[in-house]
Image (cartoon, rainbow, N blue to C red; front, top):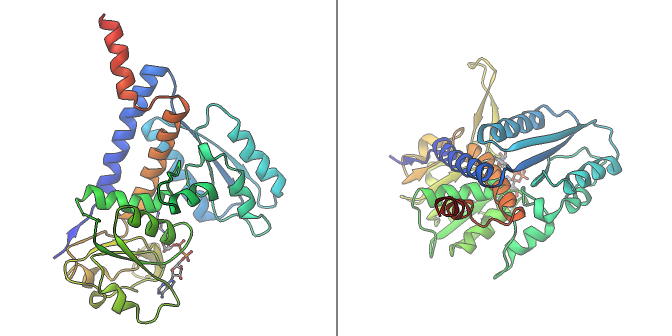
Amino acid sequence: IAAVIDGKAIAQEIKMEVAAEVSRMRDALGKVPGLAVVLVGARKDSETYVRSKKKACEEVGITSLGVDLPEDSTEEEVLRAVKSFNDDPFVNGVLVQLPLPQHINEEKILNAVSIEKDVDGFHPLNIGRLAMQGREPLFVPCTPKGCIELLLRSGVKMTGKKAVVIGRSNIVGTPVSMLLQRHNATVTMVHSYTKNPADITREADILISAAGVPHLVRGDWLKPGAVVIDVGINVVEDPNTKRGYQLVGDVCYEEASRVASAITPVPGGVGPMTIAMLLSNTLESAKRAYGVADVEFENAILREKLVN
Ligand code: NAD
């Protein structure tokens, strides 16, 4: 039976690491990182995500700011909000909650986020650098980074392995495939036009699924011993629950756990990692802004000065 990759526990571990660094930063510099979230409209799911991002910031000592703009805001108004956070020295991360309302050009807004504060990693310049050999993005998108972090912290080697990614979206599938390549895996993409996907996934040592299709990946889609990262968060009606629905991944967990060597559950897998990576990106940004490559090191120097 497959080992469970406990995303909730790993995310908690990362949050504690971030909290410790934030508190060292406060002691050494009298400053803490700041994250600003721009929310446009009143989508229930977006509001929930923004609320949990703000709560997570508070937990680790990151200052959270934000602006909630009405659904009928103009592009100009959204741009103005982004730019004011770009210019705010107390803000190290600027995040625009997606999706934006139909009448607003997403590309235009994402282009306006300062690349130094692009903690979501969606600015085309950061994505472009991620895609290029020998270039380093300032930030890597949070969900893909969370998937890789789960593999790293679970001791899964990527070099030389065959990895298959299901889904090719800008926010998950495509960037996670680029990250896997950076870790020297041989990557194949499966998407909605792929013929006989199971023949391809059965080759995978590492399978990352981000299709948004419940129970897409069956037990017989997997190579025995494969490592499975299930990014899918899908709402499935279930009259037997109080809420009337259930959250499931893309992977048939029961079947897969009998074939795989390790697997992430849904919920409690990739989900919590996304926010942990956002916090860690915001901390990184603050460290860059304040010119401390390593706060711990900085702190050690301070202590040294105090002693002498
Ligand atoms: P998307 O709809 O933008 O992209 C889905 C991709 O899957 C497309 O590239 C499509 O070609 C492919 N696809 C769809 N049906 C397929 C099929 N039957 N076979 C093979 N490929 C298929 O979705 P997204 O934004 O990338 O999100 C994917 C899933 O991940 C969703 O369930 C979403 O809720 C979840 N998600 C989770 C997190 C998180 O854990 N924090 C973050 C983002 C997305």
